[in-house]
Length: 324
Ligand code: DGY
Image (cartoon, rainbow, N blue to C red):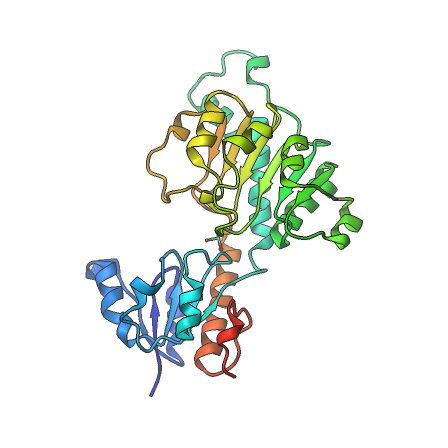
């Protein structure tokens, strides 16, 4: 008998067709009523879940007695209670690598937009404000040659660093759990403590995963260490930054600006950030290109398929539960 897959989000009709070759597929559909009710009804039958954007842990998975694997269509897996998965022997997979370059592109889009006031001046032009040559009050700051600080030098951090070093001649500083000799060699990147990096960098780019250790790692004290001319970029997870503290730092111009793709609460429906011309606010689109989302979907699908057909999935987050 075929195993059952509950495809709960970010799943295209093509993916469902591919899944149907090996599995029974249940895909909650907003046109058929409440999505959560459909999800909960399907859960006891599911051997595998695929999707993103749902908190899954003890409370949500009580009824999922047959569950063998959760395949997340994301690289970050802070939505999942991994120790509960381990307790239950449930595999968790993610989609690393395939979104590295797109996410680094977006970090740079935020960085450029914040420094050169791209989004702000686009709105200003369209509002018919361009009556004379733009003067100093609307000038931005240079990017090339400025110091780029990467907080969390994983694959995405390294891809951002390469753009800065090779494309914009930026000296690169980085902080994190370990030294990266190969990147130091390749990019001349220099290791710093977080405090040192905050004090020296012109652009501070956050690329750490969310964990108990990184939650609110940037708050009033850390913002106070930054140069008043510096710009903070966050493409990691919203709760890495204490958002009210950041809003205050932007309102008082303690720092020059921020480019944000992620927030403490998402979707961000209302926020003092919307009143701030020195904040660029994007709706969590780090990986949102057609090519990358397709690659992520395929990778997640391959992981799910392997796990349910008894092969070790390529991107197993918790190898300790692998029984193969
Ligand atoms: C990821 O893959 O973790 C991105 O942030 C999209 O959720």
